[in-house]
Length: 272
Length: 322
Image (cartoon, rainbow over all chains, first blue to last red; front, top):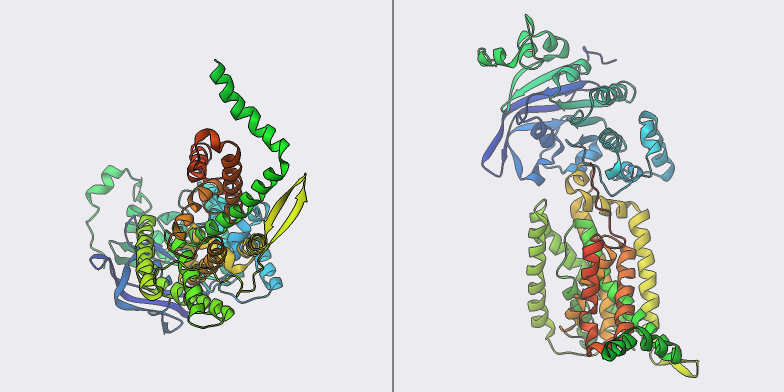
């Protein structure tokens, strides 16, 4: 279990500003830290900047014409500014992209194998890694010969996480694993994330819209709104916070609230 | 009525009667069709490689064939031994692949396929211009003897006549087959091959697992250059080495439609279908339609394929989930 007192920071994002296409300001000062062995949740609605934050860490931003214009990101103390995504994967940081992004025309197993692309390992070590993934996702073993494009949404999400696992990562940046999945499947995926975190000691930075399930599994959380961190704290505290309850979990002191009532005092409080 | 019977007879009876009556002529046609089929297949292969790895239809592939043949001959004429010229051409293609990646593809990552396609059209004219400037545009003969390729022909007596096998054609077929097997294995079994297919499927995802697009693109353009060199040598041996060769390059288009844009074996089988089909059709049905059937036959077949099987025989299935 994650020891909350050990505060060894692996990833330190400090006050970054991100601009797309030289004009569109998406992040305006986001700071966060990810602790070793923890699950950190990044919460917020559509367009809040969750994916952009993850992409600035994995350095996938540049291929989308985005740029970190201010602030610093460091991983294990080193600035990652001039690294490309392949360097990040070699250093143990890999992103699982939103919307799964499996290689549709490759089989499930080939998809997994591409995850080990940056590792220089022998055939038997590769097989070991595969077995490890199949151990966590037995369903993938059954489907390993089918084209990933023909598998179900849940299986594709598993393939995407399994593929990241093949790079033997220390930190996985997981973007919206719950997207488009049935609630039961979401729980299943999060259970596996928890196991990976506890048994394989993988740290997670998790971007989620599903605040409820994310706060259930995370150790701490950040809430983003229009490119700013508006609130952060241990997951337990966030779960109990009346504002979070109201705005993100759809609850109020009188129990469940309807959208009509919530809206009127949405901006009542100024957070940070 | 009688005219109709006459036409039906010409279409359905007399060609087959001729095939049976003169089997040697038939086999000669099959062999010639087979050889040009493999060569069409080789050109198509160059397209397939780049399409697979970057999802770009590389308009400049035919001109790469011309460039390979032309520079090979020109290097030889400068007094460089033939095999060293081959190595020089390979080095030149590696440098070219590197420059194309650095100066064009890297700037256009994640752009629409059409934009990349347009950039390959630009590249085509850039290569035509500079090749003409450096090597001149006069047609010359391919240096087959100097490369140690066999010449002359074998005659195999058969059915009272004989079938001629040009030695150069035999070596073309053998070398093409070897190359195809190697490439097919490379794509399906190796790590880099998997990386290539991954990049073709989804640039972003390939980046996210740490596949370096830059490295993949240099490799694939270089391999396409090697294929262009082999194609250039054998097409150059059959006709002259000149810019007219690029017309043949566009024969690869129907081949790709038939075989599928993403399949290595598809390129070859598509090539054989076109090569054999147009030869046999020309010999037996050509007189009926006036000559010049070879010019359009391939495109008709391609049209039929587009209507009934748009992904081609072996192309990646168009995946649709409902």
